[in-house]
Length: 195
Image 1 (cartoon, rainbow, N blue to C red):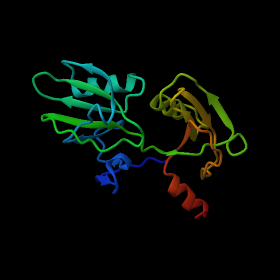
Image 2: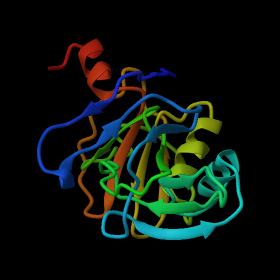
Image 3: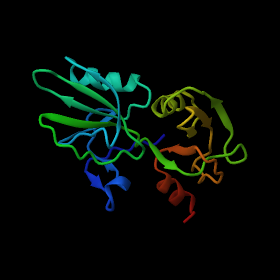
């Protein structure tokens, strides 16, 4: 499995609704800090915890269904705001000092892709309904042959795939499903000679 560590802030151009952020990793699971945080208009609030450290806040996010980002105030109150942002995570635009923003890393996976892998493209490696996207990725990480996932966000359906390396581009479209592969899909395609 490829591990990519991104050390510079990359902001894609275009409207903020279509922009994503990738920054320096704070830990192996979160990227940040960012000077801005996510508002209710950007990402749904999925929980608040008061009097918790940054690492405790990150743990709460990892344990909370749909949580993809946090806002944390590292002052007297140590406030922790859990957010369920769409993928790709939008650029946080709410300035509320001394809060800092962090988002849950998914760079170990490429995606989302609007297509998914069929049984013909990649063998089935398991089905785990009722899991969030981050839980689905963690399940894939634990299964030795798993290299990709088909994820149905609205219904929390997690389908694991054992694709060969390089991982082929997914060809199947199902309305509510999106595909994620381990590593960098563009690099996988380049290695395989497909352009």
